[in-house]
Image 1 (cartoon, one colour):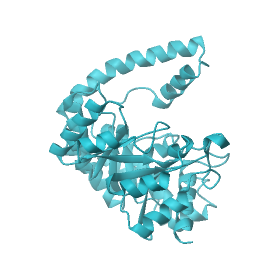
Image 2: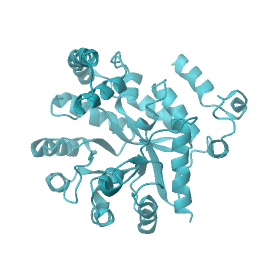
Image 3: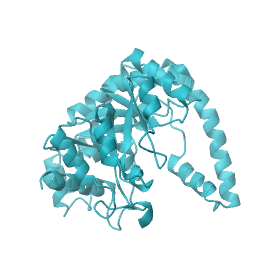
Length: 342
């Protein structure tokens, strides 16, 4: 705890700390303007951020991520699993998961080299062994330790409204699933998020377990999202819900996003916001305002109808030269403010 307290004192840059802030923070008036105010509720619309947005930052500890959140001016987050679990005692995996995802992408695209294939095979072998060890740890973990993390975030003005650990898959034990849901409650989250498993039996199981524990399960999708994508899960349990990704929905070629939001608003727990182009324009993930996702319309619909689910910034476009994830999240927050104050 002593190291954590010392880290927070130095990384969460008080007013005097700006004099020794990193070079990129100097000359960044938008960040300094909103720095440490933690006010990302704009005209009644909660603007949050998934901590995945900071994945390119070197330090991925829960303490460091809190620093990034504060510096970006965000006051509510969807927290990824690894930083939270490692905070409470989970052994780190021992390699950068982004390297794994990169190699898996090359494998899918058939651009992987022989040496990279060997690296990928080694990582997968390590993951199999690691997952068994972690499953045992999770089933025995002290859930109350997540409350310590919640209190640290709350003390800095940050609400954790969603939690996304890798505990809800078909290969996870029932003990791991229950652990993930209970950890989310201890963090103060209203819901957990996960990729839709495309398995009706599994969404039924998750929904029923969530009902017993008293939390919601919000399913995320990519380009497989359609108007009826969530219908079965929603019918199975009142605990099942949507974590709608509006950018992926547009990139999939759908043209009924606004009717979907209007129909399902009471079952949406959070939305992921990014700007993607539609298929006719190449589907690219772009700087906000350059794509076909109607972000401003979505936000103003939320404001007009007083929808209380958060709009979650998910930074996925290529970061421009000379910038970094914190600056880009701040730009996305500024985009939301401009849209909601127009």
